[in-house]
Image (cartoon, rainbow, N blue to C red; front, top):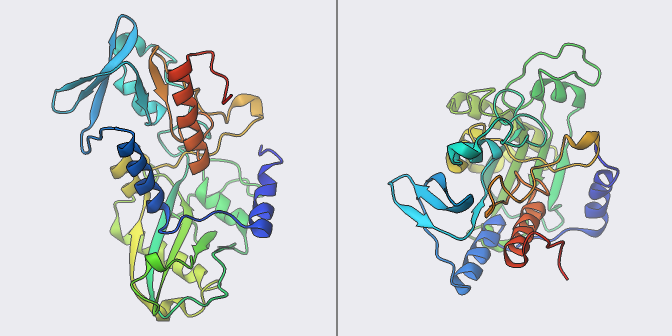
Length: 316
């Protein structure tokens, strides 16, 4: 079901490398915020939008949880399709108005997977020859698939059993950046571990014991890439799909998947123009799909649609 280009990505990154923002992913958010302020963008944090307002058949602003309204010539929504459908005026919420979610239904056990992360503080400096990123694969990837997708046919398992929040033997991405901004001094190292996780609606990620057990699995697997990891550990912080759900409003804590061609369009994300004129979708839940680069591209496309109109077809 994946396009051939997907199989080339790992080779390209391993052979030619990839870009890294000094300071980590947070540095990108800070840079974007600073750029927006320079362009006279006004931010209102901690204000939940509870409805998209419409006037004369067009999006006309949003209503906030405290009852105040904000008028606008255009509304750009970076929320999931399911959540956006709940924000729309009743007259637009007709049957079928909520687009399908790329990769599966948004709610329930078929929701796209989330990410489980463990942030580690280690004593001892990072070896100068340590790889920036290592992917530790389990001995039996089909067992991991069966645990993560218990309701889907396994590749070689006819009746997979439900698994834990993360697989018993998970595929773990180990990040060891040589970035002095992530550590207090040269005698410490910051390591991030991530793995695919079942959505919050499939398991209760608010369960602290489940989170700790899952973190132990990631740390044990990561020792293949970071020898003596547990002996060097100072402290760790765990981030689960429950944290994602709490911070983003996506009930499942799922992370949008890439939008892939083929399969009759079943894996494509919803288009950027919304159900109402003047309403636009951005972010991983919209075209061209999940991933930081794609999310940024969605914003560029919506900007073009707003500035140049519906006939915009890309940069000139």
